[in-house]
Image (cartoon, rainbow, N blue to C red; front, side, top):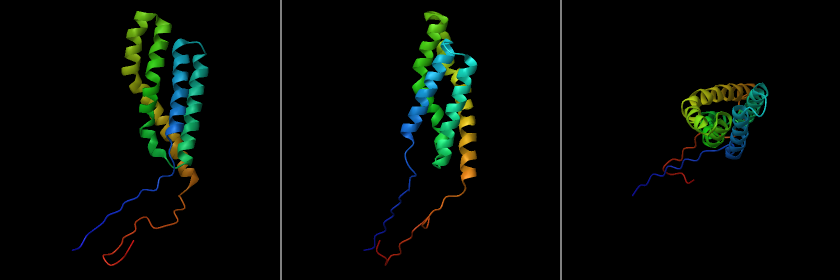
Amino acid sequence: MSGVVFQVRERSRGNVTASMLLWATAMAAVFFLFETRWASRVTMSWVGLGVTALFGVYLGWRRRAAAVFVAPFVSWFVAWFPLWIGAMIHYGFFGGLFRGLFLITIGWVVIGFGEFVWLGAVAFLIRILRGPSNGAGPRVVVFGPNDQP
């Protein structure tokens, strides 16, 4: 009787969940302050760009640039409630209820796309500048029928 075993193991370069949640929380605060106008809109725009650039540098340095595809969704998940509350503070309860709903649904397509583009540009630039990884082993290991793993 002959048996075939495939064992696939992926080497992860580290988890970025905690840093992504930290970034998403910072962006939620930026969006809240931007929408309520409790801080300068220009200042909040620069802070948001800076925080996103720092997260992009982190992702590029850790070679986890693929997280750029998930990051805007995590940011939306964390920021939708504070952004909605911020719209209610700025426009009043009923005006903010409807304008906030529009902002967190339709407007978030634009916000998320902007986050994706800026975060991706920075992450991929840092990854390119860092150079290739020094993988110290073969990418695929094949065991023959008479070999033992």
